[in-house]
Image (cartoon, rainbow, N blue to C red; front, side, top):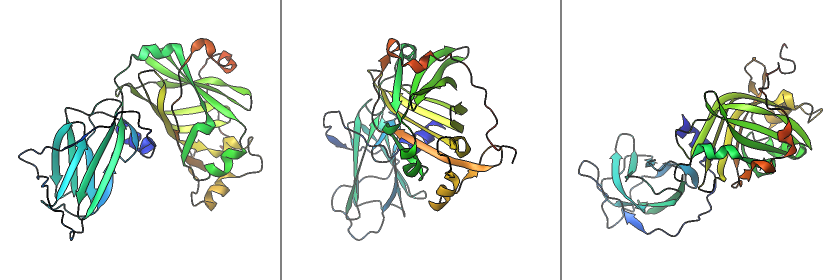
Length: 326
């Protein structure tokens, strides 16, 4: 589940390369795979790449993730080359699935930009992605917090975000990690228009892909925000700065009525070709929210926590949304 969500949230995030240039090396092939034959490229074949994974510019990619190129037809056995960067690996071609797969051996370097190149059918295709770093000691995060300005989030969904977000007052969210009886938990607090909202326990943190983490699915209610089926994902670098962060959830538009009086977000969404979908109570008042962080967020020590963190930490009991009985 987590790898799929990483692709969903961070597949289109831009990477600022911070590593030295790596010399490309030709991919090795094993005896039971199709061979990447160097030499003349067949200019007359009509095979084209229709998808790549990881997507170009992806960040937070696990170091064991293979590169998979999908074509619109079976790849010829000759007349093409594939090169990956930094490590040797194995190329496998599946004529039925129309894919080429490159598995690094043993893995990609951590916290590194990886580049690849495919040449065939008279065209060159290049891609790059950035891998996660070395695992971190998760307990060290409990002395820190990360404050995210809403303006630093890039919204992939909903399309109406570009309309209503500028109408909202300034707001920030603050993330912190604390121990719980079943493991480490992620807490969220923040401030909207200089008014603090209570800290919320988002649930137990999944560190299966350390230094990346995941939380959810969960329900989040804080202030005027109500999220259903929320998944939160992020990753840290060696300095414990938040390198990536993103979430996907169903946003209950009814809860924003107080922030945007007289505005029906569902009516606006319909104009953008994104009609509201049913919330868990059956009322069609929810939109898919998908946001990622534009840039890394520096870790701050606990003693620099904002005044909002002085609100007593407690589990916020979800209340029935407005008009739930309609």
